[in-house]
Image (tube, rainbow, N blue to C red; front, top):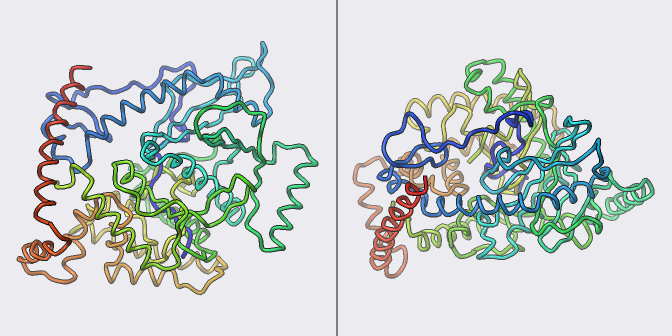
Length: 518
């Protein structure tokens, strides 16, 4: 098993597009000159009343989530003084006076990703912003917190552990500094760089003892009992400004055909992937931070974004937080059972990597990696070449687009082969050979489905079934085989059809409410 970034995180959470505080905030788009008729925006696309019902994703949940997110945004804004006080306590910043003050900027400048709300806190001196910090809170309604209390804390524990692990084992990977973090019970931790000299020395000695005795990795975070309670888990991160780099997505379209830039990008991504996989892992799962002794251990379930999305949509929890795996078969068996349960509990069931988390300079040298959520120790077979290298998502890789991606895949793996010569791996796993074999055998499509919410709808038909049969009647054959999936299949299908009818009725009702509110 090797450490991998399992899925995409939040886009734009480092506030790269935040203008000066005197500028007007970015407008919230409610309509578009290119749209006609009633509808709304969903994930950057305009959906009409009719097309919303044809979406594979659950639009009802999306509408409810947006409304809940607006309430959570206001809840945080009402506690802006507490947020400023927490930041001041963790970083030992001076109290506000006539010249210096700490400000939580207005909500118009906040950034909301898939699972987090990001608040920007600015230190002002003489009316000018001198320092900026990102105060990031998980969204309760996106993390199944009501169904499974403690999931937000689980996410924070795993994310913090990823920072600690990379700080310790991959110092060559530039990541934002994690200054501090807190949990829902009010316990808070601050990096030892903010502690007095004597405590920093003592911590260094303790960490050395842990290494010598083979104990779990002791983090560089101490408990902070002076910070005021905020009422929600959070992480306090370094603000990454344009002097470090810009999102790859900002210049992607402009330079996508520049061979030299792409070569540097491939080298950088390969270097990161090889650095993360340099050390073998003992099991499949996630590292997690242990508040009692501030160590990290590989003792949490593999926390994939897919898992959280399904659990948040009322799919019963299949893998418990403390469950890890020693082999691929048992992990895969539970994941397949999880997909079965998701189908049974999704009322709309009968119908990935991201270039925004990579910061680059003007020449596409990677300068920083942001958003470390969803980093897991996964089977090496799940390691794959990023599908977005040719500006296409996995379900779009067919025909000429597949051929184009295959060419870039080979170029990417050649770059990784070169980087391998400069990396001292502590295992004998032939990473690029496994990645090539996964492509040839088409296993890559299967593993992509396992990490995705609904890509199996497309990838099985386009890539997996043709490996076994090309005849036109294979769909009918599969329908017949599906009758032995489990007992009562016909009744299950009929029930799902009734649920779909109710889903469409409720969706139209919500859409009418949305239109009336505009």
